[in-house]
Length: 107
Image (cartoon, rainbow, N blue to C red; front, side):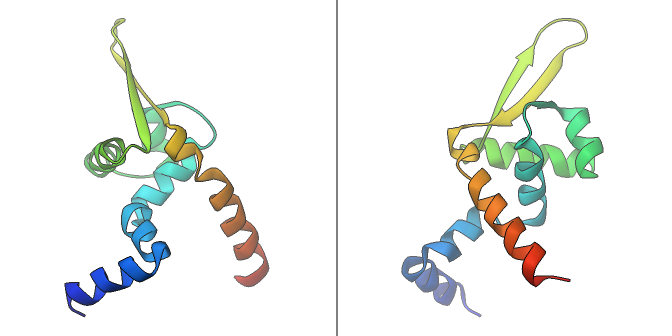
């Protein structure tokens, strides 16, 4: 499939464009995990099962897109916290709807 076809579809269907932003497996896992509140990097690593490299890349991407905010505390040891921004929090009802759909239709 050519990239032109994908581009045409995203203009016609906002769902396609949405999934292009949040649709990777790791982005969805991290966004869903952060819906329960702020977490440190290592907490996210444990709860998602992502490698440090993958998690770092995904968090950078989500931060750049405005879904996740990063907060650093300079106390020893330095701690970095991640949480959902208003844009990220706006996805929580979407996740709930998808979970309800999955409960009903996926085995």
